[in-house]
Image 1 (cartoon, rainbow, N blue to C red):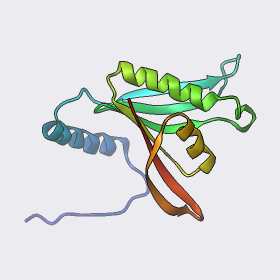
Image 2 (tube, rainbow, N blue to C red):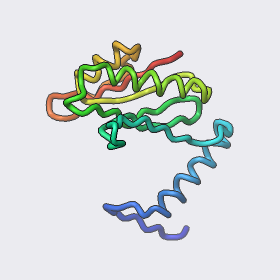
Image 3 (tube, rainbow, N blue to C red):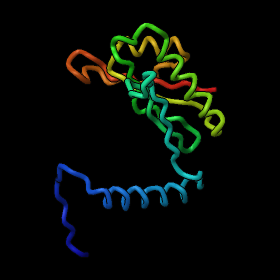
Image 4 (cartoon, rainbow, N blue to C red):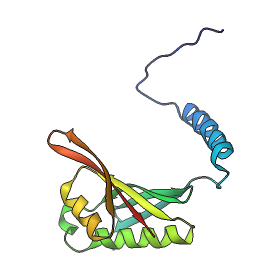
Length: 141
């Protein structure tokens, strides 16, 4: 068998990421059936001048909304924006045929916010960051 080279690198060249991701997608399409791939989702919080202050970033694939980032700047917190962002993302996900959404956080306040929006905890990693747990939440519809 041919000798293989394994090395640890700090940066991922874009062409390497595209190559490996493409191969994984092809493998998963064979294993689980073709789904049309990943579609990004971006809901920015913008000032009247168009300055992006925060927002939600995620995407849909294989029937699920993956919420990667949800950030509300400190001065805008307490206005219900997280719930509004989640509702907009969920509405779009339903249009895309998704059956649910998932998100993870190490922020206990965010965990409570997501639970108020109907998300349920399905896993935790205790002491993920010092005394803080990483909490994984899901919402099905």
